Image (cartoon, rainbow, N blue to C red; front, side):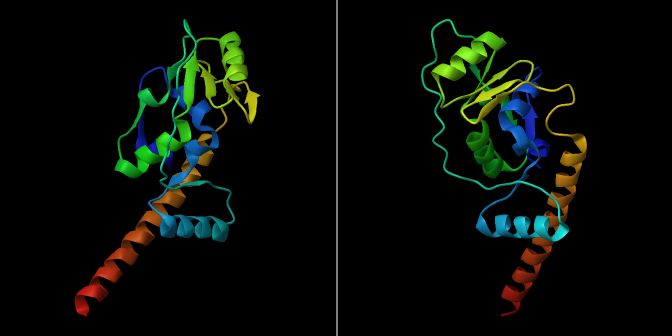
Length: 173
């Protein structure tokens, strides 16, 4: 899952979780075939899940209001595994997210800039798709992350076996 692939600066966990939303527990895949296999596997197992595939991201935050505490979330999150695929997923998912110090500033900035995902240090989230405050239990449960991690590990093993078989067939011809 995405959360397994990233390293987050201290104090930025709540902002990252709020910015990424359900994408935190998503399985990160490399390309169409892997995405299709992952989605099929989720359906076969009868579980709800999300898949993130690499994309060309043009996420630009642009100029922020003067004296704003807004700081891009992406600067504080990086891939520790998954290389360019994980970096692409991060760019797409949180490339337009900024963290601000308080609720009032979050509301004002969200109303002024509907292209941004505005989050607070407490994990509140303000976007054009809706606003929410962070619950004490968080949006993404540990069970959901563990379930997605198990699915991701299973798919990774299956994909490695398929690649090994394809290589051995290619070598035999």
